[in-house]
Length: 400
Image (cartoon, one colour):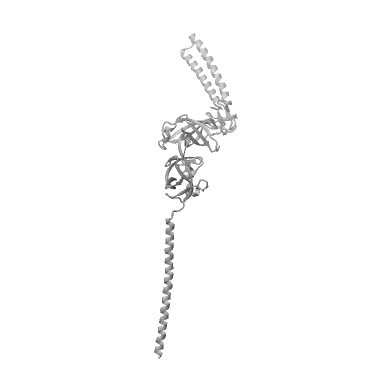
């Protein structure tokens, strides 16, 4: 009896376990079915979204235009005085007078400094007396020679003594003259470097002297430009001392040969300098003027994308009634007034993206809206070249 009851309880418990297992299986089936169903639905939705074309990107566009530009050859050089020396003394002596001041303008022949010549003048008087005596002795010998009272040898000796005394007088006068230091040419003095009473040795520097009107500007160009320059060609010069101001001149000399070390051509320009604004040693930025060109294809600077591999432009093309863009490599030249010279890769009339390049890709549809001001720097056209104060830019194909 007890065994029968125990078997009935066991069967009942077994049925309960079976029911629970079936319930768990049903719950798991419902849960995983829901997950897989949701994934299937999401995948179909994403596929539908991928199949749908993205909306056109809004950009600003600009057309490449033909302009007339005045081309230049850019270089750097140095201002040189047309004449410049350090005034020195040829003879030793003590400074007795300083007759010019630092910075003074002098004319050729003006006295700058006087050395003490009192001893030399006293010696000159004695030499003049000896010369006078020699002349008297010579005249006496000449008369006696006519009377045969002296020999020809004695006559020649008196003549030689007179000539020697005359030469000594001339030499002493030249020495006294050298103790008066004069300006060798007209110009402006620098800082006087001697003091009253100072003893000067031969070759001692007294004061710099420079002629500043006109002035030279010496500079170099690569040898490839040799055929593009000639004497008389205009040049425009700028110096850092006068920002924004230009000085005009012309090429006055061209070296006949090319420097074998640098493969460069040396040129000299001459500029009028009436106000003495240009000074010897100034750093100069030089533009050699070339004949004007009227076939320069230009595009706004913001349309150029700069990268380590070169420059490129997103060119706008018409297709199937819409507009799309294609990235095209280009070669650029000078930059003026916000526009870039297009040397290669773009023709006049073609349109390029001037703003809104950010995330553009080849073949992407675009919508032109030039009324919207887009940030060109943020939009991909902004890797703009960096320009230095000398006018040189990076990338090298750009100009300031």
